[in-house]
Length: 125
Image 1 (tube, helix red, strand yellow):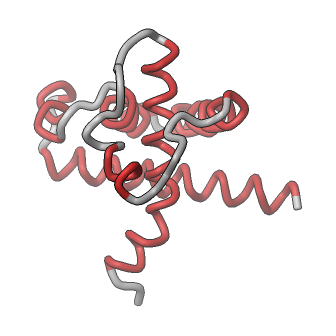
Image 2 (image 1 turned 45 degrees about the vertical axis):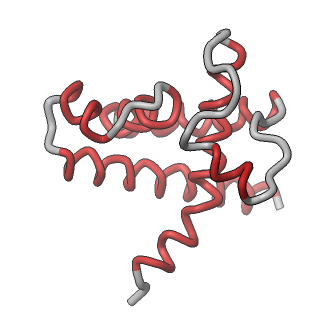
């Protein structure tokens, strides 16, 4: 059985991609000058470019559209967390769900995004 650390390591690239996607959307909507607190760890680890290329942002948008079609509540959590930068507390209040439920939905969404991306890459290979 895989450990929580192994799951986190597997999901970290997806989380980074979602952080970049959120930064990109905020930058094109005229919001968010500079880096958010959630994306600042990327800068600290030497990532030079936080905002992904439009093509990459479009790919993430397409993946998230699939997530939304499969589970609109999970999509809502991802949008609130990564794009609108809501805290877990704020998300739970907005959706009128427990923090644990919202955290589970965020994890579910991250796994869905990672799985869809991996399937798309496998199909294109």
